[in-house]
Each structure stands twice: as structure tokens, then as C-alpha cells.
Image 1 (cartoon, rainbow, N blue to C red):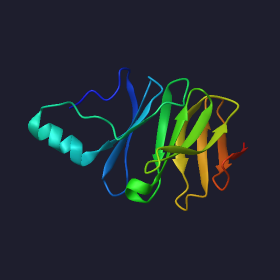
Image 2: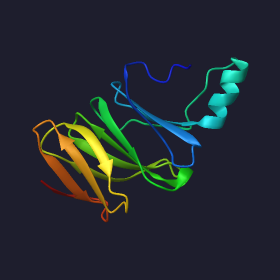
Image 3: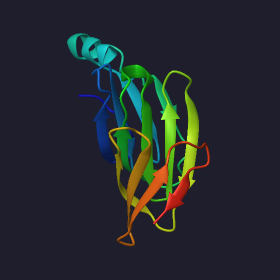
Length: 140
């Protein structure tokens, strides 16, 4: 047990190798945590764990996460009520791409080949975005 965010946690996902857990929250933050550090904290209960990285580019609550293949080098996708989806890269702590949608995004899934993301909008539409470009082409 640890305090990961200062508002409600809205999504949690593991990297495919189990090395990191990614959390998202109503505080508009996405954080990556080292599972090893969390296990050390759980065993010792000394200093609270700190995230490996905190991404703060969303302006409203983060509503969904998706994590691609690649373990600690995987692409991490976050969706927000600010109508955006962002693609993060854990090793470089950078945003690789982003897309804006016509409505708030409540759900997110990454195609198994990782060439397309699908985002569920508050307007009832499933949007598809091609991940081949830093400016994601969105289709409805």
C-alpha cells in the first residue's frame, strides 16, 4: 500500500514484463513505478516510494491507460477527459505523440500489432488513430 496520487486513481496497468506499474488519476497525472522499489518499500516500510517518472501534460483527469509490448521500453498510452491521448516513452521520459479528439476519452485499447489505438469517446464514438506519426491521424 502506498500513496500514488493525491486524487482518485482511475487506471492501473503493468508493463508486459512486470517490471513497472503505471498509474493514472483524477489529478491529471500518469506515473510509472518500479515494481522492485515497491516491493522493497513493502518489505521495509521506510521511505515512501517515488515514481520513476511523472507525466503531467494532461489538463483534466486521466481516464484510461494502455501499455504496449517491450517491458520497460514499452509505449504507454494515456487517455483523458481533456479529449487527448498521449503516447509516452518510459526510458526517455518523453511524449512521443499525441492526438486530440472531438470528445472526452473514457477508454483506450492498443491493437496487438501496435499500429493503431482505439479510443472510446463520451459521445459514444470509437475513434481510431494511426500510431505511425507524432501527430496522430484520428478517424471516427
